[in-house]
Image (tube, rainbow, N blue to C red; front, side):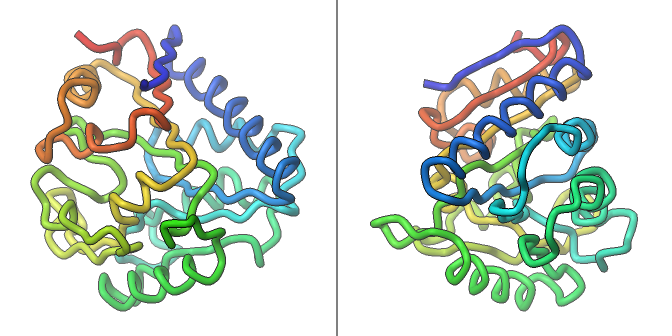
Amino acid sequence: MTRLTTCADAEAVAARAAADIARALERACTERGGAHIALSGGTTPKRTYELLSEEPLDWADVHVWFADERCVGPDDEESNYRLASETLLEPARIPAERIHRMQGELGPEEGASRYALELARGAPVSAGKLPVLDLVVLGIGPDGHVASLFPGAAALDAGEHELCLGVHDSPKPPPQRITLSLPLLRAAAGCLLLATGAAKSDAVSAMLAEPSRHVPASLLRRGRLTVILDDAASPN
């Protein structure tokens, strides 16, 4: 069952999310000696990362991955890595060897291939042979997309053991991207989805309805999904 938490406003969402992320990472480090988290870009995650950087968390045993990336260089204004670097990675002084960047500048196929290999080598593997991330932080688009998995896209048909995919036809610019696969998102121990603003209300409603390829967020594993949203984004 999806866990749904409603907060008064976007700032409260970011504060709650930062605290929840810190607890999840601390728990993983205590239980297994390390943690693996994947980050997304976006306005709401940005504020969450700023607050997370202020949490009293020891990042020495935390590996930071990414849910998706635009095919741009790491210094580009559209880079998810750049956003995370400025708001969390640098302020929290996370060791460089713990940060696993998607190399968007290599293009969709080469970038995805290299990242899949890095995941296979660097993240813990489940009995089903898929890497298992402790937590994936996601936003949701007004169309219901998560990471760079868009409504009706061929990427939603990825095989059960595909880890990372190149995207060539994103409906949002830029068209070329790299994304974690749906099977990998579903294999994660937990997904934390953030939604703020009235423009996300319909998408949240659709996500909580019947699973549909037209709403990729609805395909996440609901028993492992936590949604934190503000009053404006609450389902209709």
